[in-house]
Image (cartoon, rainbow, N blue to C red; front, side):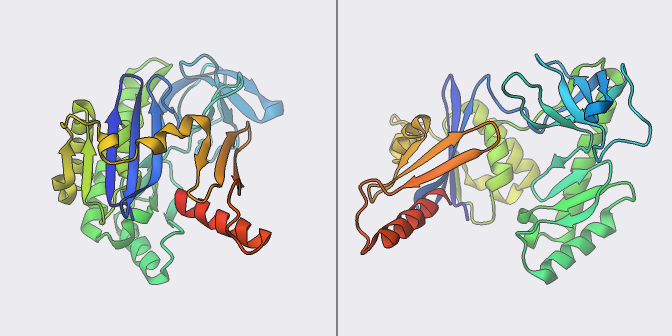
Amino acid sequence: MIEEIFASVSPGETRVACMEGGRAVELHRFLHGRSTSVGNIYLGRVTRMVPGLGAAFVEIGGAKAGFLPLRDGGLSAKPLHEGARVIVQITREGERGKGPQLSTAIRIPGYLLVFAPNGGGIHVARRIGHEAQSERLAAAIAVIARPEEGWIARTNAADAGAEALAREADMLRTEWSAIVAASSRASPPAILYSEPSPIGRVLRDKAGKDLRRVVVDDAGAYTAAQSFLRDYLPQLQRTLARHTGSLALFEQEGIEPEFEALPHRRVPLPSGGTVIIERTEALWAIDVNTGRNVSGSSAEATILATNIEADRKST
């Protein structure tokens, strides 16, 4: 489990390192001006219906209209038409000249729960593998859920009590009510909800009961972290600190070399092997090379040892 989170902000980017046992187990880089829009919610306008593709194109304010499948799980029984207003969420970034993929099956993530205001039932994260625990969570959520709502218990909710679940559910409902109210006042295209700041996003997805230190070197990031912890994890507010030392935060913590390897998509392994990461249109490809590693008693043993080392480096 993540024990420490360090965040460093520079004019061009925000970098976040998640630590376990004194080593970086996750590295996140958020480029300013190129931040992800996945998860953002918009009031859009349908510009074109394409029955042959089973889709509509929706203007949400970007360079390209978004692609909305007509069999999308969140669409109401009322059919769409050109010029219609519709609330949509980006589920995949646009690339190679294509617009983003959209959905009307809205999902608003919190720390313990994901709220689906348009329905979808009650679900528990698969990583909560204990059957009794999953059943307890499902039963607790069923008590607070309204008939038209959908809920997903995140992995973070494994040990959460009914009171904490109800408290967060109310917060997420309030968030959705604000989105609906904003949509009634806005003219499309308009953004209604943005994903949290980089530090808020990492805390939401990675912070847990083992977290004992959060250190940031920027006033804005400190305020964002403070706000998230106050709203979702008040018991962990004491873990937050502002780095003000003369030595840069990542240099002080000895993790700067980890980030220097990222732009090259080549991550060196202590044995002499490397992990090479490449992005294609359809997927991220991860290639583990033995390189100079000849430590095994056989080729198979060397390959196995290198793969184990790569797995430890990335998880």
